[in-house]
Image (cartoon, rainbow, N blue to C red; front, top):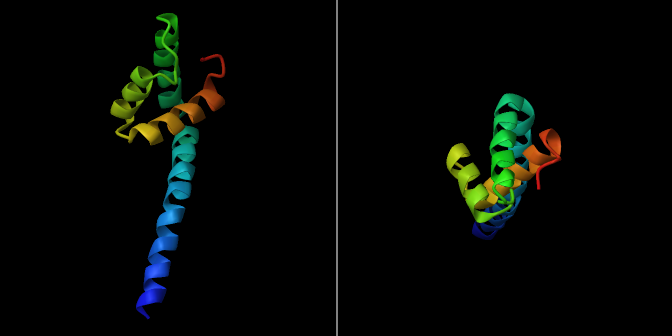
Length: 88
C-alpha cells in the first residue's frame, strides 16, 4: 500500500506545474485590464531599452503578481502573446 501512495504522490507532483501554467493562462484571459496594464509597463521598460524577458522586468511582474520568477516569466509570455505582441 505504501509504494502505491508514494507513486501517487510522485505523479501528482509532476502534474502540478502543468496545472499551474494552465491557471496562469486562465488568469490572463479573465483579467484583460490587468494584462493591458502590464503591457503598458512592459512598453515602458522597452522604451528604456529593457527587454520584457530581462531579470528586471520579470522581477517587476513577480512582485506585482506575487508569483515565483519562473511563473512570472510564463505569465508575462501569456500576457504578451494575447494582449501586446509588439513587446520585445
